[in-house]
Amino acid sequence: MSDGCASSEGYDLVVVGAGSAGFSAAITAAEQGANVALIGDGTIGGTCVNVGCVPSKALIRAMENVHQAGVAARFDGVRASGSVTGWAALIAQKDALVSSLRQAKYADLLPAYNNIAYTQGAARLADGGALVNGSLVRAPKVIIATGTRPGVPAIPGIESIDFLTSTTALDLKDLPKSLIVVGGGFVGVELAQVFARAGVKVTIVCRSRLLPAAEPEISEALGVYFKQEGITVLGGVAYERCRKTDDGAALSIRLMDRSKVLTAEKILVATGRSPNVEQLGLAEAGIRQTDSGAIAVDDRMRTSRKDTYAAGDVTGRDQFVYMAAYGAKLAAKNALNSDSLVYDNSAMPEVVFTDPQVASVGLTEATAKAAGHAVATSVLSLDNVPRALAARDTRGLIKLVADADSRKLLGAHILAPEGADSIQTAVMAIKFGMTVEQLAETIFPYLTTVEGLKLAAQTFNKDVKMLSCCAG
Image (cartoon, rainbow, N blue to C red; front, side, top):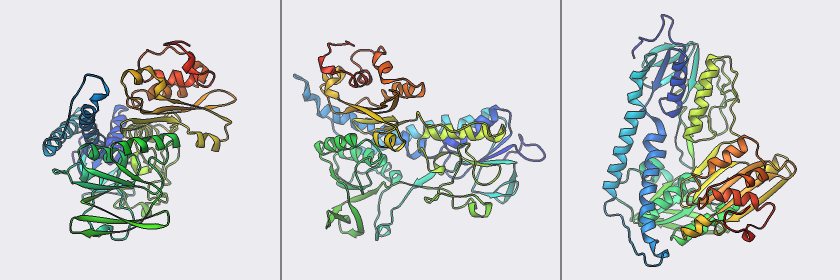
């Protein structure tokens, strides 16, 4: 490791982890004039660019094109077809994109910051800094940003089968004929739809329902759309055991007090992620962990060890790349400037890139009630949104949650083909304390999906079916 930016006593800050959170912390600190030691273990760039957001969204978009060609007949006089002609070629193109972004957004950035010294190796916390490659990297402050990896559920026999994770599934050169997806969270549903649209026979099994944290109306509707695409969805199951078969693998489940055996060529495990903490020496350092093994932090990103902070997925909360970067920036500023900044996720957008997309911000109806609000809601189906009618695709709905007394918008939840690009308007409405009436009175462009937010806000007080186009 170069020590060109270190003083004789060491660095101002050690950042452990060279993914999105680690780079955000290091760059933020460097921009404030700090000398930073950035320690990475594994492929630079972390989860998002290498095995998460970037590769999965590339494949999602590719399969959307296949699907849209197949449903072109919803327009009179239009016929088209789409198919996968070379899955390996698509994977190679995805890999090239990942490689280019990893180089441009991570590796190539380091030379631009003279006060960031990067080294590769596993780090362990120590008095006065961190040990890496047998040497002590000295710094009075440490930020841990080591991320997560796919978790493996405790299903008897799971280790005996060649199961896929979200990482290995994205690297398959050949498509399996059939696939069981274990888990109905955002990773499970995204990948299930990708493979189903590529021609794989897909079954999703989950303990509760699809997207259990989402509004129930959205989970139910998404399940209907999945079934229309040929995806089998089995919710409310208990996993009993896995075993290898001549043709792949079998999963025994219990559903409605009856055992059932499912078979497929491959099983994809998508039941959550595990924090990368085993080599850090957390117990010896006195750093408290949550029940899931994540590093516990307070609202200033501080761990239970003095002058040690943590950010990103390793903390177990808000596992989105933009929140990892946000939390890491906060941690760096607090480490260098007396812990003055507070983590705030009250207007945090969440997107699941299924089709239709699921986009949410703020409280659900259930969490709003649990927080003590008197709640008012509106639910608008997409057949009330002119954009959806013109596109001949009315799959979806918009649900708004408001405080019945103050009328302030508390939450917005969109299921729509363009939901991801519509949610930010609701983010701004919640961030700046708008009421549903103020949202309803705001001017929106016509024939857009985001106009549905205006219509949903109007639905609190009137029947939008009785309005002319653009009325209100």
